[in-house]
Length: 434
Ligand SMILES: *[C@@H]1O[C@H](CO)[C@@H](O)[C@H](O)[C@H]1NC(C)=O
Image (cartoon, rainbow, N blue to C red):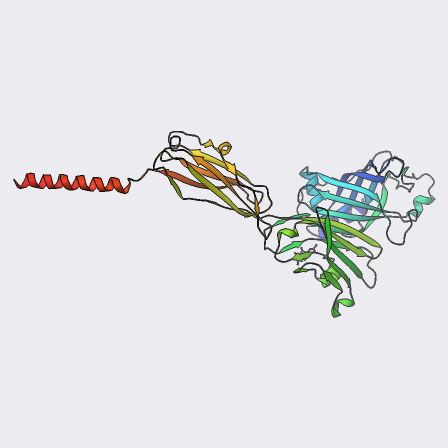
C-alpha cells in the first residue's frame, strides 16, 4: 500500500508525463539453415515495451498495463523491454497505433554485435518495428538482462527455443541498448525541392570518446551507390570530419550526428535520378544497424488544351489535343468528357480518344498528348469538352475545358448582308422622299 502511494505521488510531481506499456505481436525469424533451404522460419512472438513515457493526455482507461500469462510457459517467446532502456523516440505513435487499430509490422531475430560470439552472454536480438503507412520505424537492439537470482533459482524456466532463462512471469527480460529510427520512412517531394531524409539513433552505454560512422546508400532498380559516408567523433568535429559524397548538395551535420544522434541527410535540388531507396546505416561501438527511407519524386503535369474553343464552320470534324507536360512518375491517365446542352449528365469520350507516345525530357520528366476527334453533328454549340488528367502528384484530377461556339457568319455573307441592307435603305429613302 505504501509503495503504491509513493508511486502515485511521484507521478503527480512529474506533471503531464504518463507511462504506458505497449504490447506488439511479432514474428521471431530464424534462418532455416541448410535443412529447409534458404527459407526463414517464423515463430509467433510478443514484444512488450514497458513503462514508456507518454506526453499527451491519454485517458486513463486507454492505458492498460501489460499482464503476463497466468502460467509461465517455456515455449512462449515474450521479449520484455525494460524501462531502463535507451529512450525509444516517438514511442507514443506505437500506443496510438494500438488504439487506432493501425497495423504494426514487428520482426525479431538474433543479432551478433561486433566482438561477440553467437553463444556468449548477454544474448542480443534485433527488433524491427514499423508502423503501417507513413508512421515511425524503429530498429532496436535488445540485450538480455542476466538475472543471477533467476539463474540460481532452479525453479525458473528456460525458454525452449533460445535456451535462455525467463523471468518468474515467463518473459525474456531485455534492455534496448541501441535504436536507429526514422520518423518518415517514405518521402515524396517535387523536382528541384530540398528534402531531408530523417534518420536518428540513440545509444545507451555511450563510450567515453564517441565515434560514429554513418553511411547513406542509394539503391534503385539494381543500381546502388554510397551517397554519403561520414566518420565522426567528438574530438574530430572541430577540425573537420572525414566525409565522402557522390552527389552534389548532400550533407549531414557531423556535430548533430555525434552529439544528438541526428543522422538526417539533406539533399538539395531534387532530380528524377534521386528517386530510390536510401539506407541509413549507423555504426557505433559494437553495433551496426540500419533504417530505410523511400524517396519518391513527384512532379504534377502541366495540363493545357491546344485551343480555347471549338467553332464548326461546316461538317468537318476537328481534332482536340490535351497536353500533359513534364510530369513524374510515368503513370498518367487522361479522360475526355462531353457535356451536351440537351443532356443532363456528361458522357465519356475516352474510348474515342488516342494517346501519343510518352516523350522523356533530359531532366527525366515525361510529356504526353491525348487526341480526340469531335463532330459537329454530335456536338452542337454549347457543348463543353473536358480533359481530365489524373496523376500521383495531383491530389485531385486536373480538369481543363473548352466550349463549342456558334459559327460566325463568313466574310462573304457579311458582304451580301451589307449590300441588301444598303439597297433596302436606298429604296426606303426613295419611297419616303416621294
Ligand atoms: C535532425 O535535424 C533536422 C534539422 O534540424 C530535423 O529536421 C530532424 O527532425 C532531426 N531528426 C532527428 C532524427 O533528430
